[in-house]
Length: 399
Image (cartoon, rainbow, N blue to C red; front, side, top):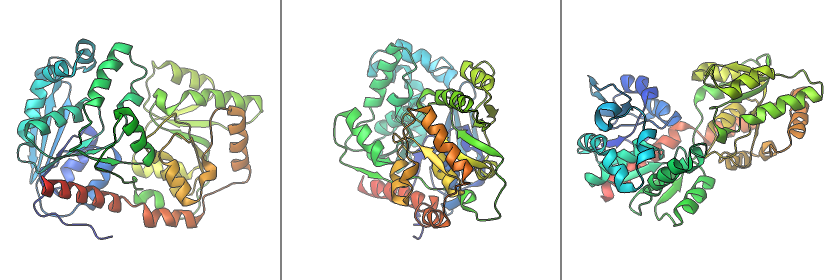
């Protein structure tokens, strides 16, 4: 599939500090403000052209505007604009959507000035930064494409009830028949439509891609890690299951150890308990190191209660390493397409999961090269990003 070339398209969207390297090294799209996790990292590889690129992020206190060639980056300070470095303080006080708009108003108006010259606004996720950008797009009457990278109500269940109520108001405000919605899975589309209680007249499923580092074929790597878990230490990722699994492994006299890659907080109670249970905690890794880590593992487990997609297990199987996933992950649709739906398993019974893991390790099971070639052919980031841009261009032209 050839990458489309957009000569005059100007896109605005939301970003974070994780995309700084992307901002410094690319000058591809005009008026692009982005940050949708892995998607942004891949945009720099596959977008061509000689257009200006605008990026915006929110920082607790820093205000900055920089330019390198055709690339502009805007950093907007929370403290200066909304009077606090923690948006939770706003959620606690605001009881209506109008109160939220008022509290975030100065930030929204600054975004609106940046968005003014954009042709289309691309939103990543449904937390407060893309929500503010949505308000800015509405002020400037810009068409909007919303790329779901997470579902807010699934991520906030650990918060106090009154904050959850406020954030659900914010989430409901993302419903708009004029928005074009891009979902990473059919599961996500159905879940969001249920949350809105309405059909979405303009939407499409575009599966996330796999970076080429994970698909590199080479010499077999020695398996140094028995069981791997990669992900944030949040309830929706179900890291608590690792404690139950560690107990099941001990009860069966297994010597297999679990390696968990996550952000390390020495004060976190669960991480302390996992260490006591023998789990090895590792810092997050860049793409190259993560690919090597997957190759060094016998099996990767993703026991998430819900995920819009699930990059981790697909990246793992792309390296040839089996990955057990829960049926509540959008990527289960892709596993079915690839013919590896046998890796979809409930994580209710830790003893059964331990037995399945032991069988994978004992037989040195691996993902076939046929499956990996299907991933290479059908799930490249180049294809996914080309489709994002086609959608953005179509919305800009229709406005």
